[in-house]
Amino acid sequence: MTQIIVLPHVELCPDGAVIDVEPGTSICDALLGNDIEIEHACEKSCACTTCHVIVREGFGSLAEAEEVEEDLLDKAWGLEPTSRLSCQAVVGQVPLVLEIPKYTINMVKEGHKK
Image (cartoon, rainbow, N blue to C red; front, side, top):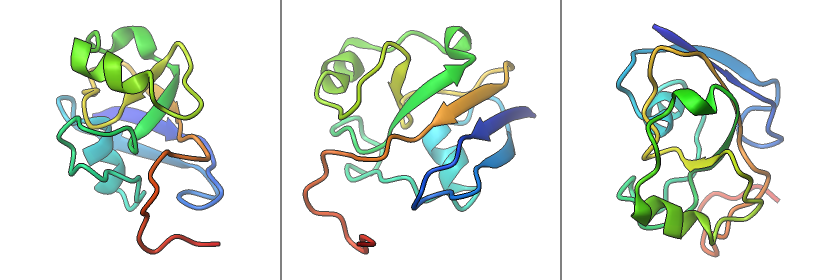
Protein backbone atom coordinates (compact mmCIF):
# COMPACT_ATOMS: atom_id res chain seq x y z
CA MET A 1 0.00 0.00 0.00
CA THR A 2 1.09 3.54 -0.74
CA GLN A 3 0.24 6.47 1.50
CA ILE A 4 -1.41 9.60 0.16
CA ILE A 5 -1.62 12.68 2.35
CA VAL A 6 -4.38 15.03 1.26
CA LEU A 7 -3.93 18.58 2.48
CA PRO A 8 -7.01 20.28 3.95
CA HIS A 9 -9.63 21.53 1.48
CA VAL A 10 -12.48 23.69 2.82
CA GLU A 11 -15.31 21.66 1.23
CA LEU A 12 -13.96 18.25 0.31
CA CYS A 13 -11.63 17.40 3.17
CA PRO A 14 -11.59 20.12 5.86
CA ASP A 15 -9.18 18.30 8.17
CA GLY A 16 -7.03 16.76 5.46
CA ALA A 17 -6.62 13.00 5.27
CA VAL A 18 -4.09 10.21 5.20
CA ILE A 19 -5.14 7.26 3.07
CA ASP A 20 -3.52 4.00 2.02
CA VAL A 21 -3.90 3.07 -1.63
CA GLU A 22 -3.12 0.04 -3.72
CA PRO A 23 -0.41 0.89 -6.30
CA GLY A 24 -1.90 1.03 -9.79
CA THR A 25 -4.95 2.99 -8.63
CA SER A 26 -5.64 6.40 -10.12
CA ILE A 27 -5.45 9.27 -7.66
CA CYS A 28 -9.09 10.11 -8.48
CA ASP A 29 -10.29 6.59 -7.67
CA ALA A 30 -8.20 6.60 -4.49
CA LEU A 31 -9.80 9.84 -3.31
CA LEU A 32 -13.33 8.79 -4.22
CA GLY A 33 -12.81 5.39 -2.59
CA ASN A 34 -11.94 7.17 0.65
CA ASP A 35 -14.95 9.51 0.72
CA ILE A 36 -13.10 12.54 -0.67
CA GLU A 37 -15.61 13.60 -3.31
CA ILE A 38 -13.32 15.26 -5.84
CA GLU A 39 -15.15 16.49 -8.92
CA HIS A 40 -14.87 14.37 -12.06
CA ALA A 41 -17.39 15.90 -14.44
CA CYS A 42 -16.25 13.83 -17.44
CA GLU A 43 -16.50 10.58 -15.46
CA LYS A 44 -12.69 10.14 -15.51
CA SER A 45 -12.36 10.10 -19.30
CA CYS A 46 -9.67 12.84 -19.51
CA ALA A 47 -12.06 15.33 -21.09
CA CYS A 48 -12.18 18.09 -18.44
CA THR A 49 -10.08 19.51 -15.62
CA THR A 50 -12.39 19.19 -12.63
CA CYS A 51 -10.24 16.48 -10.97
CA HIS A 52 -7.10 18.65 -11.10
CA VAL A 53 -4.72 18.15 -8.17
CA ILE A 54 -1.33 19.60 -7.29
CA VAL A 55 1.23 17.00 -6.24
CA ARG A 56 3.24 18.69 -3.48
CA GLU A 57 5.47 15.66 -2.81
CA GLY A 58 6.19 12.57 -4.89
CA PHE A 59 5.51 14.15 -8.30
CA GLY A 60 8.61 12.58 -9.86
CA SER A 61 7.35 9.09 -9.07
CA LEU A 62 4.32 9.46 -11.37
CA ALA A 63 4.44 8.44 -15.02
CA GLU A 64 4.67 11.42 -17.35
CA ALA A 65 1.40 13.00 -18.42
CA GLU A 66 0.31 12.22 -21.96
CA GLU A 67 -0.25 15.03 -24.45
CA VAL A 68 -4.06 15.03 -24.04
CA GLU A 69 -3.71 15.53 -20.28
CA GLU A 70 -1.08 18.26 -20.77
CA ASP A 71 -3.37 20.10 -23.18
CA LEU A 72 -6.27 19.98 -20.73
CA LEU A 73 -4.12 21.05 -17.79
CA ASP A 74 -3.39 24.29 -19.62
CA LYS A 75 -7.05 25.17 -18.96
CA ALA A 76 -7.07 24.24 -15.25
CA TRP A 77 -7.58 26.87 -12.57
CA GLY A 78 -4.46 27.36 -10.44
CA LEU A 79 -2.12 25.40 -12.71
CA GLU A 80 1.31 24.68 -11.22
CA PRO A 81 4.34 22.76 -12.55
CA THR A 82 3.31 19.73 -10.47
CA SER A 83 -0.37 19.75 -11.51
CA ARG A 84 -2.00 16.55 -12.73
CA LEU A 85 -5.47 15.33 -13.59
CA SER A 86 -6.17 12.86 -10.83
CA CYS A 87 -8.09 10.58 -13.21
CA GLN A 88 -4.89 10.07 -15.24
CA ALA A 89 -2.19 9.98 -12.55
CA VAL A 90 -1.63 6.47 -11.22
CA VAL A 91 -0.24 5.83 -7.75
CA GLY A 92 3.04 3.93 -7.59
CA GLN A 93 5.18 2.90 -4.63
CA VAL A 94 6.19 6.41 -3.51
CA PRO A 95 4.03 8.28 -0.98
CA LEU A 96 2.28 11.40 -2.29
CA VAL A 97 1.19 14.69 -0.77
CA LEU A 98 -1.72 16.28 -2.66
CA GLU A 99 -3.49 19.59 -2.69
CA ILE A 100 -6.93 19.87 -4.24
CA PRO A 101 -7.29 23.39 -5.66
CA LYS A 102 -9.98 25.58 -4.16
CA TYR A 103 -11.72 26.10 -7.51
CA THR A 104 -12.40 24.28 -10.76
CA ILE A 105 -13.66 25.61 -14.06
CA ASN A 106 -16.81 23.49 -13.79
CA MET A 107 -19.69 25.85 -14.44
CA VAL A 108 -22.40 23.33 -13.54
CA LYS A 109 -21.59 21.65 -10.25
CA GLU A 110 -24.41 19.74 -8.61
CA GLY A 111 -24.71 19.90 -4.86
CA HIS A 112 -22.36 22.88 -4.61
CA LYS A 113 -22.11 24.36 -1.12
CA LYS A 114 -22.31 28.14 -0.98
